[in-house]
Length: 58
Image 1 (tube, rainbow, N blue to C red):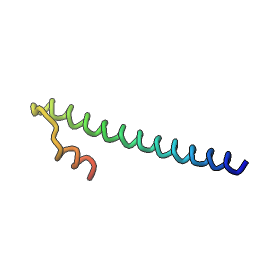
Image 2: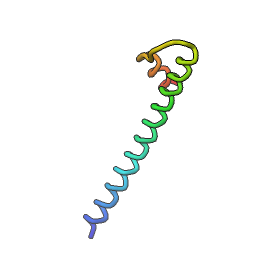
Image 3: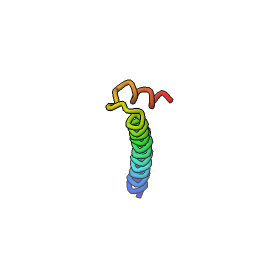
Image 4: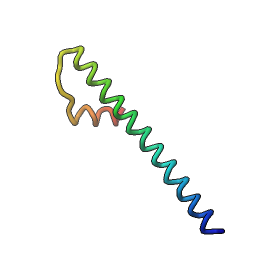
């Protein structure tokens, strides 16, 4: 009984962390895609590592 409760608790923690990680990735991807769209409007071509680091810092 106790081990079943422990397993359920660990699964809950794992899925919650997975959900937060997926949300984080979605926001990061959205930021990169937004920069890419702005670049295309301004006529620049590629996105670099500096841009991704800049998104993370903002």
